[in-house]
Image (cartoon, rainbow, N blue to C red; front, side):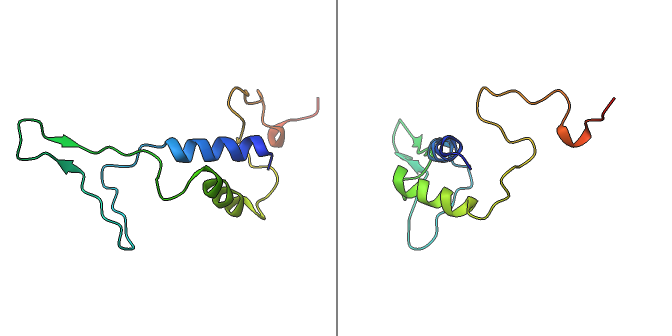
Length: 93
């Protein structure tokens, strides 16, 4: 997998808004609502993670893709367009 794809995956992972039902484990605590008993109640809406920095996230992504088939149908870099006819379905003539 090209380094550009790995970097794209790391950047997307670190900027992803965590779901409403995000529930960390392993002794990590997270309190979504704060200032509940004031005139300005608010919610924490984290994105990505503070558990890993970019270098650690890159190591994780490289671990995930290690041994993966070199070509995954439909996978492309940002800005690349899909071919009009997928090569698996192309016919001669």
